[in-house]
Amino acid sequence: MRTQLYIDGQWLDGTGTLEVIDPSDGSVIANVATSSDEQNLAALEAADRVAADWAKTAPRYRAEILRKAFEIMTSEADYIAELISKENGKALPDAKGEVAYAAEFFRWFSEETVRTPGDFRLSPSGDKRILVTHQPIGVSLLITPWNFPAGMATRKIGPAVAAGCTMILKPAGETPLTALHIVDIMERAGLPKGVLNVILPAQTGPAISKLMHDSRLKNLSFTGSTAVGKILLREAADQVIRCSLELGGNAPFVVLDDANIEEAVKGLMLAKMRNGGAACTAANRIYVARSIGDKFIAEFAKAMAALTMGTGRESGITLGASVSMKERNKIAELVDGATSRGAKVHLGAKTPDGAGAFYPATIIEVKKDDEILANEVFGPVAPVVLFDTDEEALALANDTEYGLISYVYSEDLKRGIRFAEAMESGMVAINRGMISDPAAPFGGVKQSGLGREGGFDGIHEFLQTKYIGVEI
Ligand code: NAD
Image (cartoon, rainbow, N blue to C red):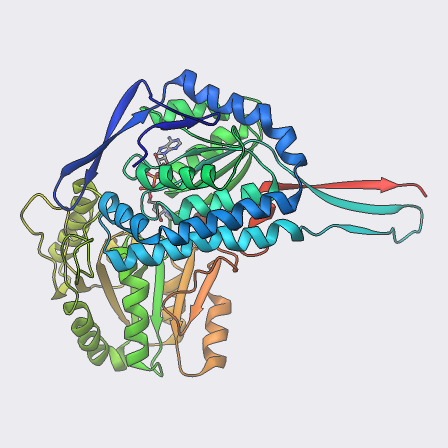
């Protein structure tokens, strides 16, 4: 297990350590090195020093490194899944799913490395040739959250390597072990020293602010909360640093009156309960047509009640712990607030005793303007609202400052597509509970972020377009 920083190709102790906690029992798993300001700057210096040479490497060479990383990661999938489950708390099936998803970003971007498009054509007036090419932006800062410690790291490292950018990775303090293992994989896959560096500042805000004000930094790729994203966007303004921001979500899940209830419940179990509800894509507001409301809630409650809560890595567990007691208590407070305002409890809603950061699968029926609907719950809690017309459902679904993903269920595809086109989000799932795919553009509108990860767009977050006008 790697617990040191990785700077300029060397594993190093820091100036302090950070305890990584197993949230299912509160025990300490490891002490991970924290970086000083000097070490953060050393990481930037290394990334800057090798940037020009790395940018000139052949795409095929970078592609082979990513392909090798995919193969190593796949061969170590069981070990990585256990590590994720241990430091994050999620159930092993979720952790295994995450490893497969995360590794796929290496494979997808190994394939994209050799396919960057360009353009060469005559201008409309015929006076010159228009040559368009794409060049690596340069040193990129990658900041990741705790909820997908592998997936969020590879979704950034993959395209950065593909584009030819050097990197500084700052993983979440709750889950650094998975990120360090991925960096170890990159080293074994042959990534040259200095290209990828890992820091873990003891005081994140001030340390990152210093890097954001150093002219050697050119690009920020951040995944996390909207609140922190806004801070970083302001920080980026001083040097006009390019930003890709994957921020919070508050996904509506709409079940229209002609939906196949069985399929919609299956989809909702995925959309709501993958990762124990700790996903930016998690269905957070469940809108169900009143005419099918009772039947839908009864079927959904049956599926939720069948989950087994416990220590994520133990066999048979399908609902693990939240990442920390702090996060668990946030979930409990949101539910207690809703019940105190009159929410009807269909399942769960009782905070367990003990040292584990557990919260049970919960279904509450709330009024359409209840406060809980304005919050990203980030746990196994499904607030359900009944609606009467499609127009009302659409207005409720769009009534949020977030716009990451929306879900809609209808047996009439025409109706579903019309609904999807009117939903204000970067992604919409029709009759599916999960659509994340490394080959598709992932990202939000409104306050859910800027830019796209994955798909054909992902590499462009690390490339800048250059136009060369040629007199011939
Ligand atoms: P967070 O914003 O608290 O932290 C994310 C990262 O930012 C961590 O590494 C953290 O240490 C760092 N950070 C915190 N303060 C900072 C500062 N002042 N300057 C620089 N970095 C700072 O988010 P979290 O609690 O780790 O993750 C949950 C959030 O992430 C949720 O809102 C979720 O929706 C969002 N998320 C979004 C996506 C997406 O793709 N849109 C994916 C996963 C998670």
